[in-house]
Image 1 (cartoon, rainbow, N blue to C red):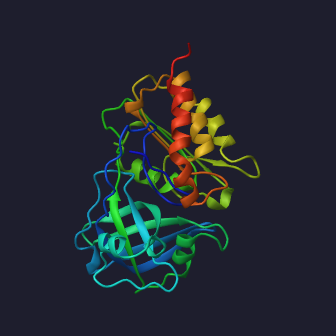
Image 2 (image 1 turned 180 degrees about the horizontal axis):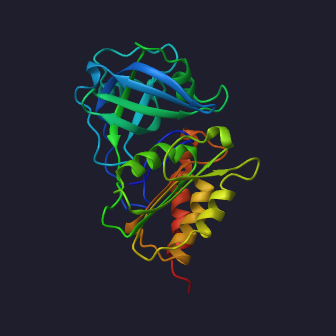
Length: 293
């Protein structure tokens, strides 16, 4: 399976290309009602969803669970109850919902509330602007959850690295790793104002440096606690590619001990990244997995 996302959006894939892709299926749809919102930092906004529309939703197996928010194009109103399969069958493609993918920061089964954190970039970004404007009682349809990664409690140590888009998954992972385990967790953010009170995170500030540069340096210089590492590396595709090369070729981390993906790519929105991602992944795999002659 291949996947990936725009900054602040969420999707999952492991590098590699399947020979054949299964037929696309409509994800199970849920309708979340906004319960509350909170600005965590100048560029991170939280939305908590609840309501009866989450009666069939469940998460918790993975720490990188994600959902696909669905936004109707301007002027399009869908019949209720929402049925994505019927929409795709009956309506032209330009009237299908626009999807944006976000990590589940938290799922509380007792209150049946799901928490999503959105990276904000000024007044751009379809989902981010919806989140900023959201008020209690507003509703959003979403599919999911998906997910593939959870930290291996038996691993000798854990390496976590990412930018703001990976912070929700990294934070959820840190809450799942057994107390006392060896963890090296790095998160690159714009500046000190974007740092949150998350125990175990080493914050790296871009402060005008190229995107991902500080993160690549930190991971390359990290104390290596042995070969039994379980690694999670996600974020902008450029630095993810560099870190994949380092971890696979320099450190020899097996693919089955490495959860890694380019959630987004500089200069691309989610639609643009999704359309080019497969070729990008194939190129990376050819460069980093094919033995030299």
